[in-house]
Each structure stands twice: as C-alpha cells, then as structure tokens.
Image 1 (tube, chains in turn cyan, blue, brown):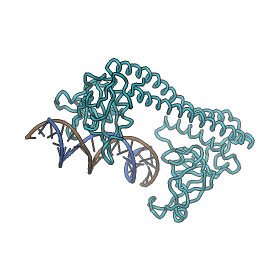
Image 2 (cartoon, rainbow, N blue to C red):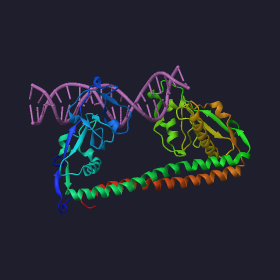
Image 3 (spheres, chains in turn cyan, green, orange):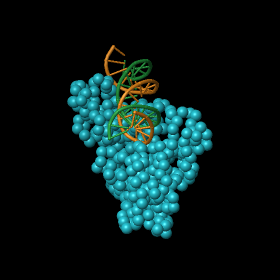
Length: 383
DNA sequence: AGAGTGCGAGGAGCCATTTG
DNA sequence: CAAATGGCTCCTCGCACTCT
C-alpha cells in the first residue's frame, strides 16, 4: 500500500498478537476418555476425538470464544466454540494484545489465509513457521476504527453468506430439475407399449480379460479405454479419457462404436453416458446399442432407471444389478416420432439447465470473490 | 454383498536443532 | 539445560473401484 490511511500504523503480527503452540502428544498418551484433545481434523468438522488425562499448564487449554489458527497442511483461523479442550500441536492459540480487537484479528487471519502458501515451508507437507508468521505485515487502524470495520464486515458477510447458502440450495435444485422432468415424462407415458431392453437393443458387457489388469502390455496410445469413473463424471457424452489400450490391449477387449450407451453395473451402479468416440471398456460397464429406437430417448429412459435404483438402494441393503436384471427391464416404446420429439425437446431442456447452472455457479464464484475482495479492502482501510 | 486393494491428500509423530 | 521450534517422515483415512 502506498499510503496508510490517517491514524493507521504499519505493524507486524508480532506487535499485536501472541501465538501459543499446542502440545505434541505421543500416540500412547492419547486416550478414550478425559479432556478432549483438539486436532486440526476436529476444527474441520471431524468427529474422531482423542482425550487426555494429563494435568497440563493453563496455556495448553483453550475455551469457547478463543481464537485458534491451524498452521499445518490446512490453514486458517477458527473461533473455538466447544468446551474446554487441549489444543494439539500444529494449532496455535492466538492471543490478542491491547492494540487489536479479537474479531479484527480473526478477519485478518482469514484474509491472510488465501496467501498463506506464499509463506510456507516443506516439500510434501506444508507448514508456516511461527517466526515467519510473526513477521507478516498488518496495517493496524486505531481500536474504534477496528470495531467499526468488524461490525461492517459482520453485517456484509452475514448477508453474503445468506446469499451463498441460497445459491447452493438453488444449484442443488437445478441439478434435480431435469431429473424430475424426466421422471414425469416416463410416468406420463404409462400407456406406451413396453418391451424388454434386450428386445429393443443389444445389451453386452464390456471385456477386459487379461490378468493382471495393470499389465503394461495392455496400454499404449491407440484405443481409448473407459472406466466406470469416466461414465460417472461424464455430462451425457463421454468426451474425454485417461488411458488408451495398445494393440495387445484391444485383442483381449473389444472396441465399441461411438454412440454406444454405457451403463455401469459395478461400483457406481446405474450411471449412464453415451460414448463420444470409439472405445474399449471392462465388464463393469455394459454397452447398449438400440436396434431401431432413438438412441437418446433410450439413454434418457435409462437415466430415470438410475434414479429408481438409487431410491431402492436407500431402503435395501445394497444396490444390486446384473446383466439379466438389466436385460429384462421394460422399456417404453412409443412411436419413433414421439421418441424423436422427446429426445429433441429434452436435450434442449438439458442444455438450458447447463446454462442456468453455469450462471448460478459464476454467481457463487462472484460472491466468494466478493468476500475476498471485501477483506482486501477492509485491511487497506477502504471500507 | 461384503472384503480387499491402491492411491493420494491430509494429518500427526517425533527428534535434531535452536533459543532463552 | 530445559523448553520451544522447525520440518522431515510416516501414518491414516476415505474414495473409488475391484475381487471373490
């Protein structure tokens, strides 16, 4: 900053806060009962607690309302809201000195967290050291101004957080929207003729015979190889792949045509997507090729099936689907004109959904950026 | 349908070195 | 000399399959 606002002082963190490191426990000191030992994972919402029966100096305990900062692996300030606890190593208790408001310190640390990685040490595991932390510069306004800034941030963040929660709710809703429209379409189509899936389409399992599965001979750069995860993460069309089979790989597998409907029957049960290119896949994926049906219409119907499977899975012990069950599923077969029009209308609806989602997502990103820039401005004295 | 596997990221243990 | 600190190494956990 070129020029400090009037009354603000150029300080370092060491001038306004004191950092007290937590106690490092040995495994055998951690028990099932006693005073809770607060570790970083507990600050992040983890429910796996350790306890201790050691009598420790007063400084090792923290109480509700006190400010903590995680300085290893994951970083950030927390206002502790639980009962009396012993805070573990890799957590500092932050004690505010006379010249800083505690909530102001909290907001500053939140602001600082986004650039903390510029100050860390370590190769695999990142830490910020106490000595580095203490040298972090802070522009410190007089106390009344700090209190004004804090109350302004409290108000603004309160509103923004409300909007963020609302948007996240909306995004969830939008995600479910097309699914419920789909369900309606196929419920309304009750009077359509129905035929078993293996009558209207070829239903065949993928192939990958060779063992071990990770044999280097199998791989090369010729034939895309799709796994269940690729089907799950696809957005209607599978348009990217991680791995390719070699000629040898192809020989023990099978190449499916672009446009084949892929349905997963292992691990992620019932995920559906359409191949965007010729590819191989293992037998945890079933390839479905309609005889004369509209490919997208069948795809959409199979998508509703996934919802049904998910619903059943909630009450039953575990999802279960095999080739036989799948082959015998009744598929609604309206006239080809109706199929075409539904597939056409629905894919336009889906496109609309993608658009809405991307607008909502960018609003969400905007709000998060807004919070960050508000903090920026607050600590430059521009709020 | 449950057990097993591989993997990567996050999290904790621990000890040599530094500090007071 | 004890306590605090820095930071390297190893462990754990959860996910996403994968096997039996």
